[in-house]
Length: 326
Image 1 (cartoon, rainbow, N blue to C red):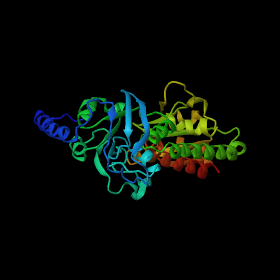
Image 2 (tube, helix red, strand yellow):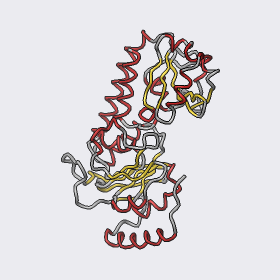
Image 3 (tube, one colour):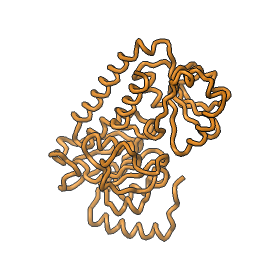
Image 4 (cartoon, rainbow, N blue to C red):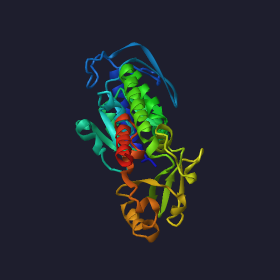
């Protein structure tokens, strides 16, 4: 999936790294990071020195932080969301494949952030030029993990890890544990209030999350992390066809869709499936479904609902659910 680096470029990279490492005296321990005296971006008065060393578990082992990293590169936009929620900016970020740009919902919060290719193909030269103190990647970047390590300590998180768990890790890394915990607590209170509000109104009604794709319809099951917002956090009822404890999605045809029997459907749409969605919506099968005739199909942005798992995006998703079902 990732671009291969030519031998010539590798040679140039090694030379650059030798000079960079000599200048920075980076620690020989790949799972430890120290950041010098410059204040982190958008510190809001936070001391860059950790009160005590912080050790974070990640997919490659442990990483210990003695100081707050100032220059962080993120290889998934959800991690930019996490940082921005704490009032920090990454110095560099990839963009999402589905949007081919930064998320609109972040507005100008990502101004002055260097763009580093896509999630699928990060720009290694661009990352190197930024001289980051820390790179945050996912398991999808394993193919370039060793290359990343040559640039800076690299923290590898599971892409589908619960955003609240990740939020608390960012709180530790950025020396903002109380702020991170408050964001999690605020979310729990928000969904608890909405769950109570919807309990009577949605009693006996089912809710499905679907995404037209590849001439079929992807039904997100109860195992999918966005579905878990609907079913676990908000206590909504899934159609029987969507109950699955192992696979996060299943593909069904437009002919089978009426068998889903969902009273409400959240339909995920973006530029990649707009034509297919329109094709389905023009069929008699679609037009005669109960959720369609009762105007209980709600079109939402694919990337925001399934790609940007940080507190800013997730709170917007909760707001959109509330608007649709209230």
